[in-house]
Every structure is written in structure tokens, then in C-alpha cells.
Image 1: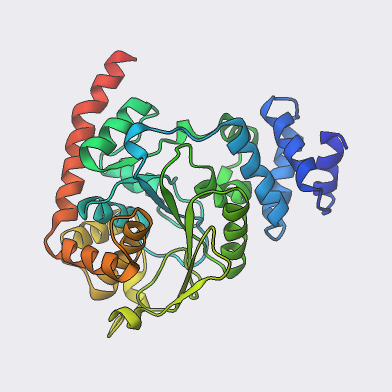
Image 2: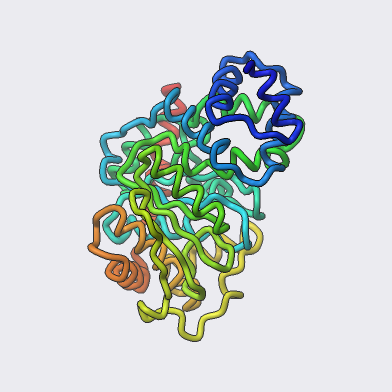
Length: 348
């Protein structure tokens, strides 16, 4: 089947095979498909219910054509990121990244500007003076110095930029839901593990299957309240990529969640979310906010091998926040970015 026929099937609401879509992505990456067709394919993929074969074809293509870069400092690093969608909360995974680094872990975090909520991790990082550079040297140096670094949008596979350009003048968030939801699976860097949040049970199962079949080292998490992170106020599920059955996690089993409210986890605009992040990193936030961040940081600490289990990681994170150490990590990251980024601009 030709790429044109594959596109025609999708646009007509029929599902091509995974290998046919793999060929289609190759042709698209080579610039061989017209803009109008690409827009129509993206719109069709984003409108259809998520399909395992279609999702895996895109991730397979990215990982085969553009293998993740192995930075020296990232051997023991973890990524902590969500697929987006679901209930709107403050930036839990971004906040958790600072806590993990402060607790002795390493985080090389991927993420983007918001597409399913008002504020994404990219928006937060830019506002905090942590704009990400495409230089691998900068990323590696920051990871070594701070224990924390961020993947720049420019480092993602070129086909992602080609798709975004094809969508213009439409905002990519309007028709790019399919690609955006797969962002955690196409991180441009190789590392020890990814903690990937899925906002629905269906997506949780699909991401689990993709990471398992493509041997992506990952832990997939989901809250039954429809959030792509672990919550201290709800029942959660988590599973390693190489496991068959998921684990059920009740926060009360860890001594968490007492007198906590879901409303405490709601997000706001950019300044409100920065305020929540800052309060948490200083250890001055609500119990639900602190415990939810601790759960996610604890999972990343477990995935990175810093602790033996989730309970140990969660309580290490809580102790770390009470001391205000994560806020000092933020200040260290800001100082590094302020000192090093201008040097890269001068060298360019």
C-alpha cells in the first residue's frame, strides 16, 4: 500500500496496519507527503479513539530513525512526565522533578507547553528562567552540576517539527493530540527509567504495552480520578514495562491521604502554578499537595534505584521538602542556567 492509500484509509475512518503507518511516517519525514494530507492525517489520528498499533508505529519510527542520545551524566537519570489530558492539576511532575534531585536522584525531564491544560511544564520552566537549550553539552553539564536538566523541544526528532509546521496556521494542540500524548515515549535522551503518567485507564494499558514491546525502561502510573500522576487522595495503579499485571496503590497504605482534598490539587494560571510549586519546594504547601508530589517523587526515586521501594522514596521526599532542600535545588538550577546559557549563545 502506498503512503497516499494509507492516508486515504485513515481519513476515511479505517485503520491501516502498524507497518503501513510506519512506512507513512518514513515518507512524511522525508518530506514526500503534501501539507494538506498531513493535516488531515493528524486530525484523523487525533479524532479517533487511541489505537495501539497507530501509537506504536509512531514511537517505533522515532526510536529507529532517531535513537535516543546517551548522555554520560544520564546513565542513572530518570524522566518524570505525563501524557496530558484528564483533570487539570498544578504541575505535579515538574514540581516532583526538583524534589527528586534534592533527595539525591537525577532527573532529565521531558515535557512541553500546555496542550490539554492551561499551563505546561515548558511554560513553567521558561517563566522560572530555565529555558531549555538544544545543546547536549549544556544539558549534560547541568545534569552533572544540579542533578536536574530538561530536554529542549528542538532536540526532538525532526519529523515532530515537520508535523507542527504542516499544521500551521492552526495551533498544534488543536490537531496534534495524537503526537502530544506520545511525547513521553519519544524523549530524545536515553536514561535509566521513565516514570510516565497516563490520564485514562485505556491509555495506561496502551503505554504499558508499547513500553513493554519496545523495551523502553519505564514505570507507568495512573490515578483512577483521571489524572496522569499518582494522587495522595485517590486509588492509583502503577506497573513496570516488563511486568504483566499492575500494582494497586492506596495512599492510606503508606499513611497518606488523611484529611486531604482533591480541590487542593487544582491548578490555575501560570503565576498561580508557580506559586504552588514554590510553596511545595519550600515545604509550605497543603498536605495534599505535599503528599502528592512526594508520591510521584518517591516513584522516580524507586525507578532510579535511589531507594528500595515506593514507601521509602515517598517518605524521603517528604522529609526533603520539610527541609526546603528542593527550593535550594531550584535556585541552583536558575543560577546555573543564568551563568551558562549566555556562554552558549556567544559560542553559537
